[in-house]
Length: 508
Image (tube, rainbow, N blue to C red; front, top):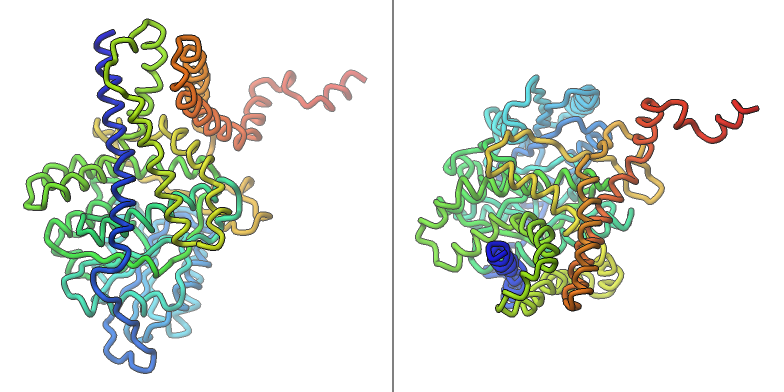
């Protein structure tokens, strides 16, 4: 029992580090809301003779529902036609390839410098596609957009001048916007989390001189920066995180532009959100393994090193949450909590850090309607805890070196509430982890009952939060796949599972 008690204390303290870091980043954001360097005004269209060449790379894989939307947005970019090259890096294995080829051919006939590069294999996945595209890229700068993005026409005119004026800057990252924030409560909760990351975390890191990551899309790289940092590498699932850290360790500066917004589609399916989180969790831990020692051995200030390690290891919160979920009832059942002398109740104050950060974000971005957006905070809290089991699997796989298959996040081209994704061939099937999440929900409910009966009233709300989180994510996953489950049951037990109306007809 002593060992479990020590594990509990270490895990609780470790979790508190990440929780209280939300306070730190919020403080740094409020402290440095003004840019360190003055904004560089975009070039006026009549005086664009000195603009450099740009290659826009569009890596896609099986995106039949959104590829046309992406292409139409990119060809509308306001930039001199003789200085822009567009590359559609297509690794698709379905009818996306035919749609893409047709669209590109149509715009090439109109004089657009547009290349369709279709690979027959997915070596290196997204990183491999980007690296392959660089072999024929002609631009001094490389802009990247994933399939779910719809940038505004002036995107390049708002970003390229910053790179021209500051030759030490290796890449520019912009803020993600939302095409379907109001589609559902799930997309609203994800939008709240995305806003917090981009408005507070990225701004705080960049303007405080800390290492920050490129977010994989909606940004522009200096070609020489990519090359000098070692190029795109595919030994992690977060090739963007990896390259951006390697570039900064090579002493390239980076610039984040929170006022330049690139709208994107938010996953409307919970399973798609979980897949996205799984990939980010596994990839970031892979980056920690790859770059952590290098970060610690650099001449960076100790605070920058600390923040970088916290940043790289941030998804460790999920296995730590699962460990707490599993051992807390056991400690209470066998009296192990009586051995805890450290006042861990005060660590619970750290749990208010992320909600505060999201509140500050919404007030800053949407002063007149922040309350409407912040209503998604309870659901976001459930999502954050509910994906802990899935992300823990990702973290364990990363540490064990289990294969790095890149699994895309499906896009459905949904915006209005009436748009449907449920019948799309891209929807993801039920993960059996959902039943593990439901099991953790029941286990946590038992833990809450133990806490109440052993006099640990203060612990009951936190244990119930875990229970509701796992219950929501597991239950929602099963609900989204209910038709597939029914079809499976029909195949397994065709007579017993027949609809009531069918059984009535037979009885007649």
